Image (tube, rainbow, N blue to C red; front, side):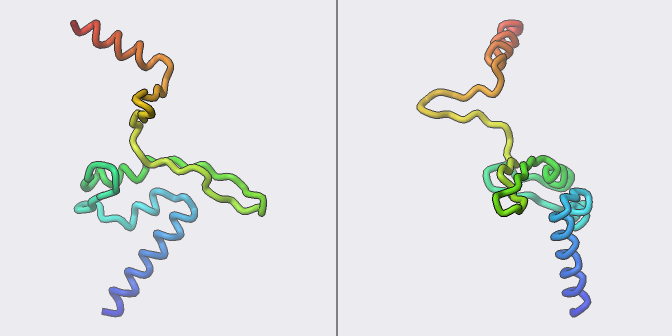
Length: 108
């Protein structure tokens, strides 16, 4: 039993150190290749390879604060979804509406 606890603690240490270094491949090494399930809030459930691949899909922006410490100022791990405010949908790209309209008119 003690060997199992030790091995789990080693894996947790590897996870923490990989996270701190930003080493995604090492971070993924502690996740089960088959049978891993991602049940992240606000998204679909993902399984096995799709769940592992999703861990690659994030972006972060680091800034040095006034104390000289590096901190994450922006973290994005969500899908690109239009926001709506006051009944108006946001437009991520200026040509987005024109592209969608051109596609739908070609199909008719």
